[in-house]
Image (cartoon, rainbow, N blue to C red; front, side, top):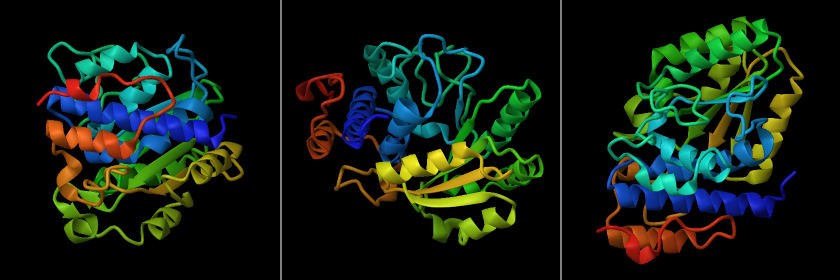
Length: 288
C-alpha cells in the first residue's frame, strides 16, 4: 500500500492540475473537481485494480463518472497514473482534444469507461456493467461517482432499487456530498436528507465518511471490497466544494466559474507545491 503522505501529495497534484487545466482552457467546472482529489488519488493509485498499459484488460475494475462535469480531476488521475502523457492535460476542452468538458467514448481516451453528461444516468450504466461482469464470471469491482445534487434525479433511485434487487455487492456508489449545486444549497433546491437512511431502506450497505480523509476513504473502499454482505455499497463522502482553496470553498458560484489569472495563481499558492510529479505550467504561464 502507498503511505498516506504520498496519497496526500498525489491529491495535491490533482488539485494543481485541475486549476492549471481550467485556467489555461478558460472553461470548466473547478469546485467539484477540486473536492474529489483525495477520492481519485486513493482509487487510482491504491485501491482499484487497473492497468494503464492495458486499458482494456478484461479483469480490471471499472470506474464510471456520472457527474461528468468534474472530469478535470479524473483526467488528471488518468494521466498521472500513466494512461496518457500529462502534457495532454493542457488540451482540456479545446477543439479536437480527447479531453472534452464531459468524458466521451467517441474521443477514445484510454481509461474512460462511459460517456457522461446528462446527470442521473451513471448508476444505471454501472448496474449494467456490474451485471455483465457477473454473467461473464469476472471478479471485478465497479465504482460509480455521483454528485449529491444529482441524487435529485429520479433515475438514480430507480437504479438504486435495481442494484439492491440484483444484489450487486461488487458495485460501489460514491456520493460526492458537498451540499452545493449550481443553484445553491442542495437542501434549498430539493432536500435529500436523510440520504443515508433512504439508501439503507433501498437495500444498500451505507458508509458515511470524510471524503478528504485518506484513512477513512481507504477503510471504506476496503470494507466494500471484502463483500461481507450481498448488498451494494454506498459511500457518502462528505467533501468541501473547492477544497484546498480557501477563497473558493463552500461557495456555489465556484461550481462552474473560471478563475482569472490572478485567482488561479492565488489558488495554486493556496494548494501549495506537490512532491508527486511535476507542474504542467509555470505560474506565470497561466493565461489571463
